[in-house]
Image (tube, helix red, strand yellow):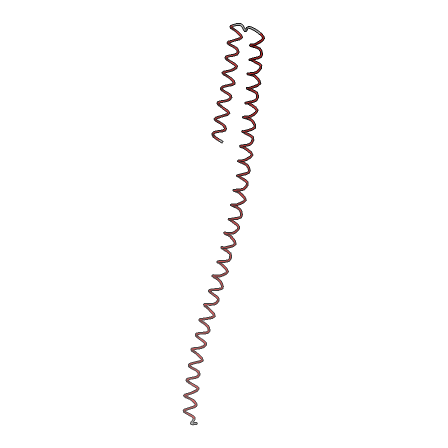
Amino acid sequence: MAKSECENEISEIQAQLNVVETSLAAITNDASSLQTKLSEAKQKQNTLMKREQAAVVQLHTRRQIDSSKLESVSQRYEQLHQKIENLESQVEAYDVTSNPSLEEQFRKLEADSKVETELQELKAKVANG
């Protein structure tokens, strides 16, 4: 093989080597960029998962609080209802055993009116939650 042919082959090989090195550098750069994007995507995914967990906990907590409020209102309503029934029973027992005066009848009407007002207020509270 002649010296000039060898030099030509070496030149071609050198040119191909330069192309391969350039391609390799571009691939390495692209791989690095993809790795960075993958890391960012994983961080965003972790953040979203933590936000989801926090939202689930908040929702569960609020449901429990609302449930206990509803139970409390229901209990107060039931207590008031029993109180009213007790008062009405007492009034009936009193009416059966005595002949009330006009003044006592007015007091009874006032008491009934107050009880009715309390009942309406409690019903409004239950309706409004």
